[in-house]
Amino acid sequence: MNLSSKLLSDAVNEFAGLPGIGKKTALRLVLHLLKQDASKVSSFADSLTKLRQEAIYCKQCFNLSDKEVCDICSSSARNKDQICVVADLRDIIAIENTSQYNGLYHVLGGIISPMDGIGPSDLNIDSLVTRIKEDNTKEIILALKGSMEGDTTAFYIYRKLKDFECMISIIARGISIGDELEYADEISLGRSIMQRTPFENTLKG
Amino acid sequence: MNLSSKLLSDAVNEFAGLPGIGKKTALRLVLHLLKQDASKVSSFADSLTKLRQEAIYCKQCFNLSDKEVCDICSSSARNKDQICVVADLRDIIAIENTSQYNGLYHVLGGIISPMDGIGPSDLNIDSLVTRIKEDNTKEIILALKGSMEGDTTAFYIYRKLKDFECMISIIARGISIGDELEYADEISLGRSIMQRTPFENTLKG
Image 1: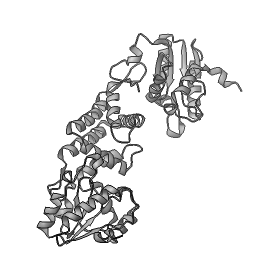
Image 2: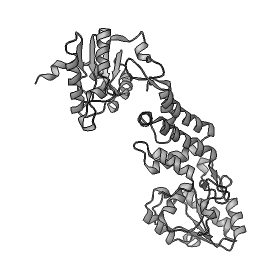
Image 3: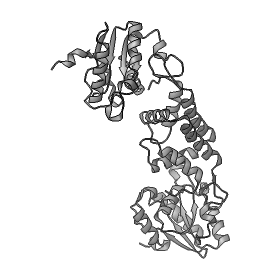
Image 4: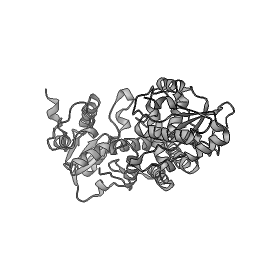
């Protein structure tokens, strides 16, 4: 694509570097921004740099936060006896949108995937164990993707935790195998949290 | 969508304000940026503010440019006897990609569309007339969208220019009626420039 302006082609290339954005879409977005007020474009640009520079991860649950401890962890309205283990912070957003869960979370930061070179030590699993030990958590809900990697991760965590006195449950497979949690519809996802089953039950048969 | 961080929701909202980007896509893009180096994110943000603040439009053809007169207008290799009239600078990019045209351009900045409240005075038509008068341009090629608005605009320009000694042609309707120029394939678009017909021929029948 021959662009008449270096400024234009710089901006288009930056957009085209984002996942799922091709050159033509990038050009359309850039030309849209070009028609906006300069102040609007600055606020767009600022929100990105600010996010990248100032955002921190909650030291308890590893959710993205503006503070050291996130709003969910510090809320007195949440049930501190439950921790829902998720791969990604997008999964927290998806579960929060169902309004079916009132406990805490723990973000692993991915799932065990030998193909991508992600082992247990790359994930926030040790901190989960420490947290359960210190807080005497009563229930762990594993809300991971229904795939081989998700099941492996669930099983790994189950083995790490089975000697503790907390119950380990797994969200009901109301969502189809292979689906990403974030794209599941809210009713199915909500139901799969409500109907969670003890992890041990899934090992039989 | 309940987001745990104000910084995060600010950035997501900014992205979701772009055309064709929903909240979920915005979140995916923002989380992608969050995983990049801070310097990469800054360069992304900078390219946008810089483009908006520093980009100027060529004072001759109204193409987006880094200089007062764009590279096409100032190039000695281009045929200065021809001016191709387009609605949008995206159309210039599309035509340049065909490598079938070596003249100059003139960007109208839209087409006449009473429904959207765009009249002839909102477009760069007077400057086109002045330019043709001053430069003794030999041929005007109307490369506008094949729609009622495109035809109206072509006819309006034709009437303004018919007393001049320049030939007025219109790109061949090799591209289907209603198609946006920028999405046409390069071969059809290139052919429609090669096989342009005098505008008067299109008025018969």
